[in-house]
Image (tube, rainbow over all chains, first blue to last red; front, side, top):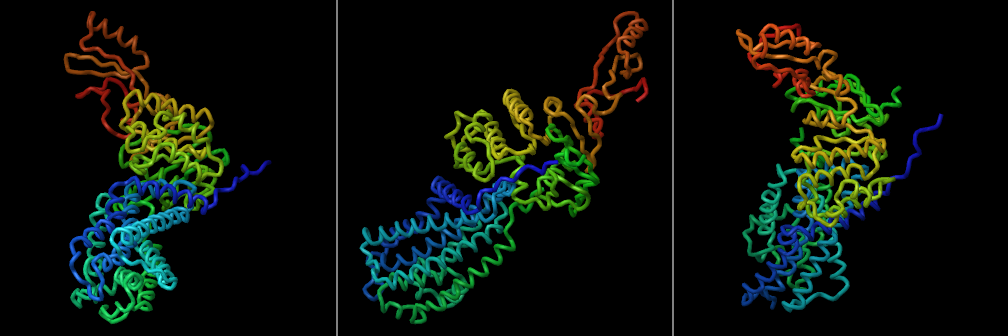
Length: 274
Length: 295
């Protein structure tokens, strides 16, 4: 008696994951809403703010474009990771794409590789575009020293990573795909206001800053200011310092919390699936 | 032999907080056959199917799909299945060719994507984004994604809902071709003509129980297709069930001395038998009715 059909090897999760990255990026740039509210939003706001506050002096000889560039970079990272994943995964679950994928031999790892790849590609592209516009059109001084860029890299990595896992976790909150934007966007907006993305952080009321300290975006924005604002500017920070050690700790804590929660709450089917 | 069955279910029970959705279902689907699962909404069709697909866990009973308990189905097992769910509106911004090619990459031994696209009749829509497809085209894309992995067993959940008659005929041809190639198919449908046309056997499920399993021709038992004659007697509508309708009509002609008022002779369709099985009044029975022969 012959044995059951010889098993052919399944494609490796990494290979399938990389092909999902390509698909995710393609989709991202074809969806107008995503493109505007996630990708171009910080770029548009940087332009508006530099124009509106063109005469305002931000002390230390820093103009509006220079002051808002790090905030928009931080905000962009949060949008391309947290907002992008929270909304799209909520929609994919509601539209039964996740269920369809679960019914194939695709490994869950491949799906998440696709999402991580999407976040990396879009956030790097967005950052590049922000930097080019700030440096070339708005006359912002871009740092050149390797130590500042090294600092940028770890803040960028911690920011995208924590934003992504929190976005995956938050995707279970909207009750439907249609509600996803309406539920996620206000949360992001609120955090942006409180974390000093749209205002000078030190000018915010103390209680608001205290609330902001519990969330990752404040630390991400502060870290980015430490990279893109001139040395000595930290004297203007509420604590008189960039608080990089504390920032690293806060972002890492959010990364771990996000991972644990995402692992617990992530589901492939709708809650009401019957 | 268990090995020859694509699906084997014994005493399946699934409870939800508010009701018992499946209450002791037995089911066997032979390899290579098209099996249609019929039943009203809420009868337990979808729950049963989703347990077989590995989406839900059974509370009680034995379930074996391609020799594997779906609750323990791994990627290797999923590679042998194809699932076409009830509705789909996902992946709107990707084209037909992009999706079919991408899904082919999930499987160890996929079919040729171009051949699959041709088989479902979407060659001219290769570069069209899914959101621009019509309902029928979208459904055919779902089937393409369901069969791209060359499955041994294909689940089709109400595949032709919302189709126009021509699209349905085309779809049937597609399913017949899959069957010819040896794919085992579990079809759930609301359309009795679809089950009659496609299925080797049908199972009728009602209130969480399998009421009957038979070929479309023998469903409802020996007497189910018995002819029914009805006419207007002086006391109102009368109906008889008889195996000799011609003799019955001759007798009536004699009794009425010629033309019999409102005479009608018909045999119940699969739909009539089905409705009777699930305990709904059938359109074939005139009301009010005086039954003139044994039930």
